[in-house]
Picture 1 (spheres, rainbow over the protein chains, first blue to last red):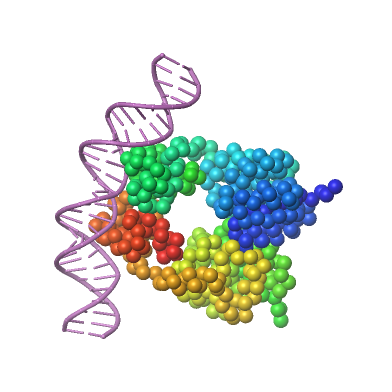
Picture 2: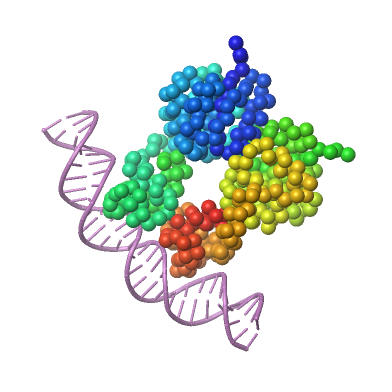
Length: 204
Length: 204
DNA sequence: CCGGGGTCGTGACACCTGTCACGGCCAGGA
DNA sequence: TCCTGGCCGTGACAGGTGTCACGACCCCGG
């Protein structure tokens, strides 16, 4: 039996992907068996390479890392996933865990700890950045409604209400109502600010 | 004489920093002699470690990678700098070269090419992502005025005009004039959109 | 069965914003 | 010297925006 842990790397930036591969290659008990740059290639590559653990970035073309984690959970129940992300947004952590991820690591943790996190995840343990876990609790759950999120995502572009309304196929008046509600829930005063805050909290 | 190239790594994300170090350590002729996580520590660490080439990320606390490149050029004339960034924004390339950087690489280039880029820079050559170079030419120079950039940077937050005006110590009317001018130069219709576009172009 | 909440829309109101015209100040180039 | 251009401010106008009240529909849990 091979005792090495077979790792799949998913990150849209090729340079980071290669660098992480070099980092993990230093560990004798780890082996990078696949590298992909898109979220929708994760399941196929993981199956083909018989990966044990998938290291997933969140920001990726195709589907994002959180959705990829859910896809892996559904298609390959024995494979663990570890989400590695640039932004320590509280909402990301919650959504990643709901998607079945076994671990959540921010990219500014010391590089020494990455291999250890992979081992822990492979052993069936949960790995969660402790500072982020507390922050996630105090912020509470996402208060935004589905429509409010949809409208805010478009509002990130910064265009006028008419543009947003056309893009979501709603009346301008309804869009303004949703935006007003979102502004209240984010304690802001303009839709641009509300969109930015929601984005930073990982609510979109 | 030592024939190895002494490299300094600057990136705010410790995981990426460590991974890049592992990647460069694979090359026998390269040696990572310093790692920093802030832009304002680059010059001191480069001098102390007698670095030949500085690999600088743009997004960093303290001062950004472009300003750090300028600081290295002024303080350590013999040291070359290579800017490595996540976002391939045309304005970044222009500003990096004006700051005396010898190279500009985007983070989604293949990892194999990084070591080669370091060698080229050390040899006195320029390394520039070719697709970005053409894009930088068609976009032309930054048309925004100093005040317009300052106002737009604050406008990124999304707050109302009164907040922006207070933050830059200007009259609300003047702020609206600057914003209107910036909206025209970016071919947009709201200040939020103008701020986003200017940000994406690297004009801020 | 009756609430409660999300969704969609309308209408009205006060306020904010984007635009334009105008004036004044100061630096640098023709 | 004049003149162009950036900078700062005011005033006014039309249109956009945030808020509220109201009504309607649907679904779900009590």
